[in-house]
Amino acid sequence: HITTTATTTTTTTTTTATIATIGAPHYKNKNKCNYRFALSTMGTDAADDKVKAIAIDPRDARGVIFDIDGTLADSWKLGFDATQVVLTNNNISPITEELYHDCTRYCTPDRLARHAGLLPNDENGNGKETFQSVGNRLAAEFDDLYVGLVSLETAGFYDGIQDLLFALPQEPKEESTSNEDEQIIGATKEEEKEKEKKYVKVAALTNACVAYAHAVLKTNCPILGNSRSNDDDDDDRKGGIYDRFESIHGADTVPKPKPDPSGLLQCCNEIDIDPKECVYIGDSPSDAVAAKNAGFGAAIGVSWGSHPLESVQQAPFDYICETVDELRDLLIN
Image (cartoon, rainbow, N blue to C red; front, top):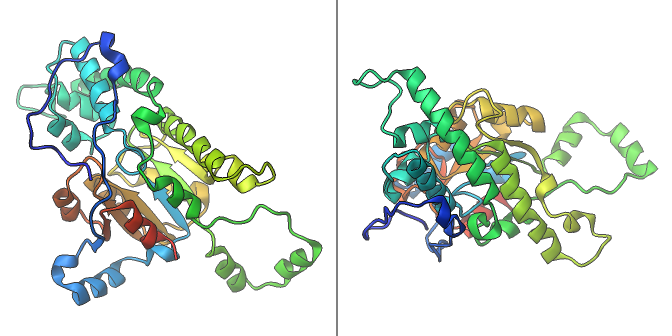
């Protein structure tokens, strides 16, 4: 999994002249750990009882919402290098990888304002308006650069994510027959609800801009469809899984960024699933807080993103997965 390295951190200033190297693959072999409950330090039996009391079984979830960076996509190097370009172009000192990873818990304007040495209310008299105006200006530069550099090399899915997304059960697209229509009419609400539980609706919420979210998903998803089937009649495969994301949002299309719950609640509203029947999956402590604040059925943390396992364990996640295979086992029967 990706963690902040203990070796000497590279802080070389990056300029627009070296933009072609942004996001070059850096870390490999990310899926090498064991599954655990977030509360495993209580002991196996106690942890199981506690999790059952506060969280749904993710296999029973009807809505699965994903964070993108550090959860679906291995894109931290793209974000880090693009950040260095923006800072350098604005005569701001470059940052370390460690600081970049730590600040990914913030939305892009807040993160960049902090990299510029500002805080929402600091003792030097720089108020919230300065923090926001500087952050918004730097974020606009960052987004213009960042989104255009999305590719399979800079923001490809982690190994196993493709198969996981395909494996999430989805409702068949075949048109119903007259007999099926009659069965639906005669079915009770309980029977219909039980039938719907077999299928999962998928959404995505990131603290990056929404254009970036769409770029990452569109870049990765055609690979899935084309790699899984050569049958032109296979509608579920040939288009990839981009269309499975019924709601996609960034910090710029929701009332407030994470850890505020409004973005997750907006996704739930759009996929028409009660938050109590949804799970949110992310790599940042702010993802766990957002899910809890939204009243989600469960918050699932992953340790292969920007935040080290210790940080993920300290966040209010109900479950923690250290490999993509563990996440798949947790979500899918």
